[in-house]
Length: 126
Image 1 (cartoon, one colour):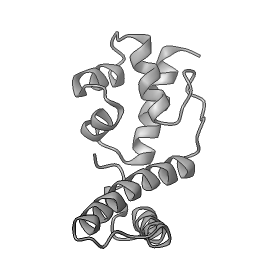
Image 2 (cartoon, helix red, strand yellow; image 1 turned 180 degrees about the vertical axis):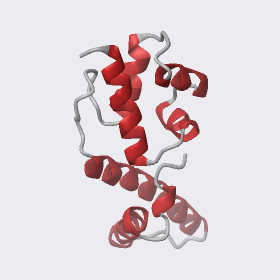
Image 3 (spheres, helix red, strand yellow; image 1 turned 90 degrees about the horizontal axis):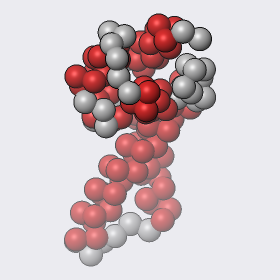
């Protein structure tokens, strides 16, 4: 595979996820400037390209390692756990910590909202 093919696969995956360069930067821990350099096929370290492809669910050759659906579910789960931890922390401060069942219900509810509900457009917001 040629480098340009890999760059095109990165660009395609970015479009499929509808993720901005800024959010891709924050979530992948690669600077905006470097991501723009990658997308413009400028020289960057191979490890940087690999870092971006891994985040996007691709291998170093641009082959899909995680389907779009798997990648979205993974991200929804991460965000749901984060939001549930905020609820749990607040409840614990009020001496009303949630039991495991309620916590899992909250996580499941947030996952659904990120995948299909009101928060769908914020899935890839850092």
